[in-house]
Amino acid sequence: GFYAVCNSVTFYHDETSGEAALHIGPPEEWWLLEADFQDWITDFSDDELPEWLPDASVIGEAPEAALYILVATTGEHAGQIFEFDHDGCEFRHMADDILAYVKLLLQPDGALLSSFASTMCFSTDDTAEQWWIVEMRDSRGHVARTDPEE
Image (cartoon, rainbow, N blue to C red; front, side, top):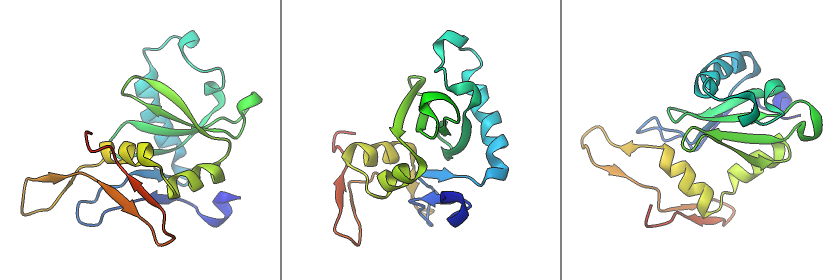
């Protein structure tokens, strides 16, 4: 599967700023991600959390953004990928499995690209000015644009 090929992967890393959209961590670091994630949900009651959550694994995050990537491991949602976003404290179903999730990340639509942009802070060392992702083009011809009002 995925981890036989990629132990971990960072998506859309910008060398100048050090920012990245998302990071799927190696299995040996999942316990650290789990500990960070638990800090965000301690005030929720059990009935406010998804039924698949107690057995889920936290496999990644949006660095510095309190957005966590989880995989359900039991029940009808086993193998499905969810994101938890601390803004709004919501769990979003993202894909039916890790490979579908990676494919989604590699070919984002405008909404997903806007989500990436909202968790990243781009600037250069010589200026305090920040910039926003407007458009992404890949080598296969895929184009995605963020909402210019973001």
